[in-house]
Length: 187
Image (cartoon, rainbow, N blue to C red):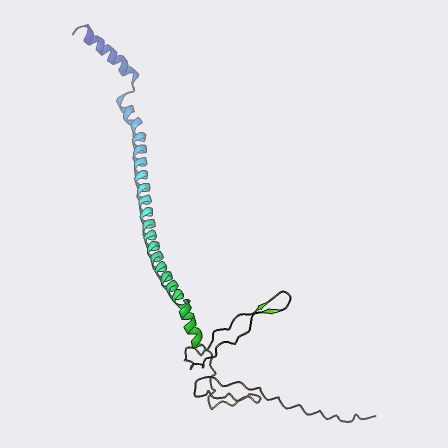
């Protein structure tokens, strides 16, 4: 072998002296490899946890959207009912069922105290028979076994037309008798 091969060996030998021995190189790589493995494992675990948290949030979101849809449908149905009951013809029909009559022409009170307008009575119509739904808080008759209170007024029975009877003024309670005074001794 001639000069260049020897020279290469010389250069390689000099470079070999600068580098640490082979056993020291593998010992220096071990912490680096462990660090890379730990970082990759931690990254995978955190990615798995993040993915499962996102899936859980997605399930909650779909459940809340379903509930929102149901509640919106219910709200729209209730609004439809309110609109139907507050329509002018429905209000008029309900007022007639309750025995109300249309009012006459309105009157206005001027600032000076005079009345503007001509009073007119409402058109009286015969009162319709009340249905059980319209009567709320109707008088309940007491069973026959109970004794009435000493000052209780009898409850009149309903009339055959279904309208409640007119109330009468209650009778005045009897006046208390004057107390007897006894003469005091010694006077």
